[in-house]
Length: 300
Image 1 (tube, rainbow, N blue to C red):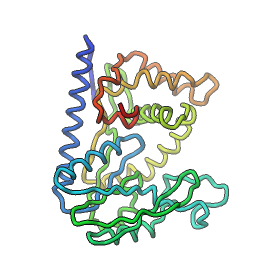
Image 2 (cartoon, helix red, strand yellow):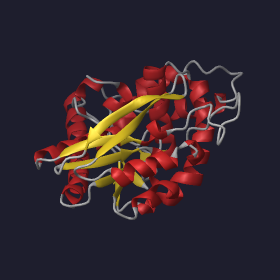
Image 3 (cartoon, rainbow, N blue to C red):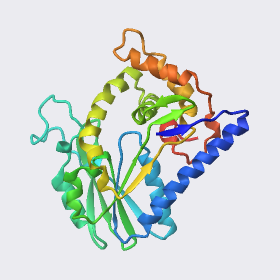
């Protein structure tokens, strides 16, 4: 468990704390990307549960490869989803479980991986989630100075990793520890849930009840398919930022305030409200433009 005891005497104390947390996280990322960029392996698999910080990590990997003169092509495993009308996996009017390996076109993914060598052309599918169909392909030529970053929660699924014949570097990012902040306990899952509640409201217009509802299935899949396979990744990153719960306070209280007493999730919302109500606040303007938290609160 991570324990943080801190009292801010001024706004400058908060700014200094934010900067210290950002420097610490950047150091962790630097150490990880140095291991990646020093390797000759061209296949990088990036995975992690929902709201773990995969986008920020991907951008860091891309930037560090650019510094050593290499290009990075990001391939989203989500684009290899099967279409709704494919009878192998999806029945008529059945809701698609996008976390399941059964909705991935493993044959097409295998073909893409096998051809993804310097000097070859590959075709990467484009998947439209609105129509739940494949709407085209992006043709891409693999150069000598290029690496491929396969990104998605499914990147640690055995059915996916087996397609690479062990020729890959795995990167897994998550909130790795529970946190005791000024005497209040926040579990690692709660921290990601709060991130998602805020993100889904801001970017997807989802209310708290809907996100709570989805969270149950999300966590079930994580325990079944993601966490048991995370050790396939030789690089493990912790995305927790020491200041984040102070930062999230006003946003999460606003989201949770709309959960009424008749809601199935009222007790959960009330518990989180009580935990956050006792915290100080850190303003978003104190956060750097390239912070991990732009994933959840938007670009500055």
